[in-house]
Amino acid sequence: MKVLITGAGGQLGRDCVARLTSVHRVVACTSADLDITDSDQVDAVFRENRPEVVINCAAYTAVDRCEKESKRCFGANGVGPGLLAVQCSAVNARLIHISTDYVFDGNRPVPEPYCEDDLINPLSAYGRSKLAGEQAIVESMDNYCILRTAWLYGLSGGNFLKTILRLALSRPENQLKIVNDQFGSLTWTARLAEQIEALVDSKETGIMHATAEGFSSWFEGAVFFLQVMGVEADLAPCTSREYPTPAHRPANSILENKRLKKAGLNKMVPWQQDVQAFVDQNRQPLLDEAMAGQA
Ligand SMILES: NC(=O)c1ccc[n+]([C@@H]2O[C@H](COP(=O)([O-])OP(=O)(O)OC[C@H]3O[C@@H](n4cnc5c(N)ncnc54)[C@H](OP(=O)(O)O)[C@@H]3O)[C@@H](O)[C@H]2O)c1
Image (cartoon, rainbow, N blue to C red):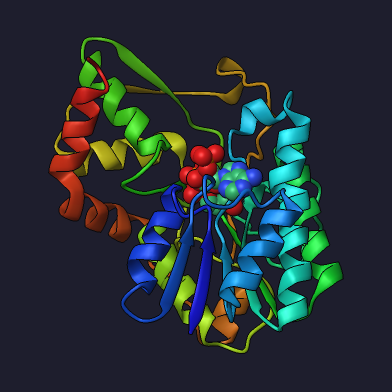
């Protein structure tokens, strides 16, 4: 099948390109190739490539900066997905779009998870912009999958695990305080790409949750990751109040992959299993990058 991947230079985009290239005819568009907020560019790329499936990995993901950069945030996360949906509808293409746990307020007691039909109530500009993207798709077409995921990490790009590794290696004598009152599921982009591959050929449509199984706090996730990496560090738990950020984040980001399981399509595995596999495959490049980041 002809598969167009937008945001192909991001951490999930790269893993989707790597995963799908051997199976499908992939057209990979980075932000330099295609700005999804530019309707003329979107139109031209669709006319040239006539995709059968579009995987939208493009988004403005700087959650704290979204609070001030409203135009950029709502453009990439709200308007862009709408433009893709209109084009997909016109050429009968299937759209697989990635959304987020941040559409929920996280006020539910841990460990009660959020399912697809639970009430949405985003706390941040980023969450509201991603919700706008979901709504623009739902209003414009039928053959779509909106996959809500959370706490992504992968080999390329910046993410929480890489930041923790860099800080642990650069300042081993310093205690690292890590938030211990927000809960979610660290989700490997390579596993999510496998999940997306399974959805390319499927007839399932609608909103689905796709995160790793199980959950932890950021602190527990960091402790586990550094243990697996074999890196010693002085980590201490702290509260969100001790680590204030411009954007409010949900305390409970635990999502249940209810619809994927019901459809027999769930590829997601326990988060610890994937962190272990991620390290087994990438330990040396992760160390090299973290050391280079200190220079
Ligand atoms: N990261 C997480 O923890 C997390 C959690 C939940 C959901 N998600 C969602 O998962 C998806 C993938 O996230 P990710 O972590 O892979 O993000 P990422 O690494 O930041 O990649 C996003 C990509 O989108 C590109 N982009 C931004 N604005 C664009 C535009 N207007 N047109 C075209 N491309 C644009 C960026 O290019 P430039 O770098 O050149 O701007 C970047 O390559 C996103 O939809 C995100 O909202 C992520």
